[in-house]
Image (cartoon, rainbow, N blue to C red; front, side, top):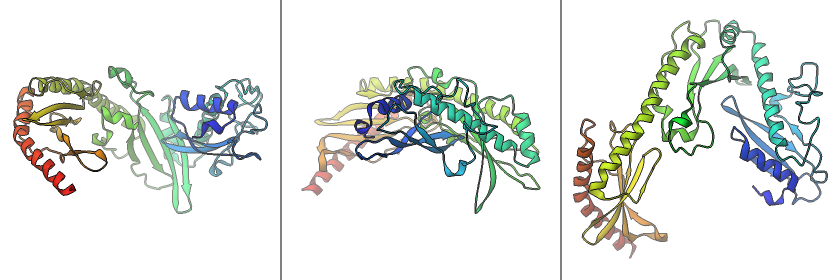
Length: 375
């Protein structure tokens, strides 16, 4: 983002928005709306909502940077008017209306405005869902009123039947606090996406999917989690307790498995020496310096989340052989060594070491042949 060409007052608000938003907002594009094309005073924000994204254009005026921006919503939301009309989501005369007393010198104003509008948009979509003529949906809504944080929206298209999507936050546990030393900047929340078709005479099971931030994969992969079945006649209020109980148990196990991986790295040290690098938080990776005679190489060990059920993968990297652009010669992934999840950690480490005693000779030969091919 070319922030150096954005007027200072606008840049300060945009920086504050990106840095301090509790949900990840991205700037998709920036452009100029004034005679000086080098002054970028307009941009598109990509804002997460209901496990999808909405795009809003923010229109400042570089000639009058003290003025409040205009916000242009997406074409599918023409009826969303948060500050106008009888049933507006935000009272335009209320002190909560950020535009009523806009202060361009306050860098937090844009963030407050976007949060306010997103809250109003959440209310707007909830109202639209409540107006859908579907008895099943009305019942689902009535059973979920006490649950906080649910987002919902309707969607349809020319060749797509009408659907209602729910984003349901799961678990009250603070996953961030469960992992000591984690560097996660935002809360690691897991959501259940529930998609109901609208207007079907014989209600079928909704489409279900777990969604989580990418960063959570360092601890727990939702792709490995098997959702419980949705039984005939079931509703969300019945389904969620079982799902959350299963999910909480597996996340607890995932946190405990960090210590199992940590101890495994520790039992490697008597054989390989202290690691040059090691993942101190999730204990998923470690790198050791090894040698066979005068041939020195690195051993990269990647430990899977399903350890010890699944064995670690190994990659050898030469410290003496380099290919084009100065890249070191590396081996393919190595997993063809004896393994049993029932062994003690010391036995597992010993088997890896014994395997590498022989494999390093093959790797040295591979490195030498790679050098011959480059000549």
